[in-house]
Length: 185
Image 1 (cartoon, rainbow, N blue to C red):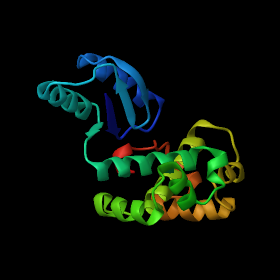
Image 2: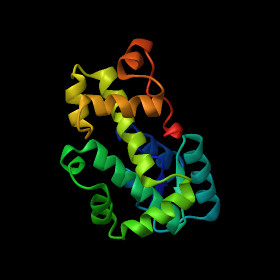
Image 3: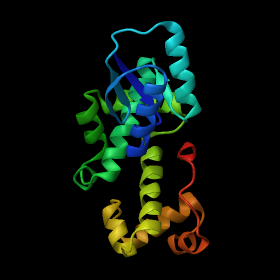
Image 4: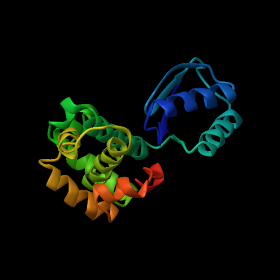
């Protein structure tokens, strides 16, 4: 049986979901961002309710609606686009169409309707999250971070960073700010 699981963004999420599945009585076969396969072929409604509650308690979502599943796939494609340097150099809409096998217009329409924001806005926020992570955990220069996050220059990165966070990258570092909750993104 396969589940679509929302709000998974990193390898720690994979570990957490594996634990939730096992704790709910399922046998995980494979778990990756946005998706989990379990050995069981079917589950009783009460087992699914318990799984849904356990996932929600950890900040995840059991997705059983096709449009919500598409939104989660878009989010994962955006994360790949932002975090994989090879993908980052591709056009975002082409990247989404390639990974999802659905038109960008369709994905964009469903995403905006359900998320209340555009794919482009989500993409911008994810790029800034990557910048925050690199600012706090690496010794890269601002120009290197800008290049890694797909910005044309350090100046462009600084402008977008300030627009989104309200502070410059150096103010962010000096403040000791953390990346913040994924729910904010």
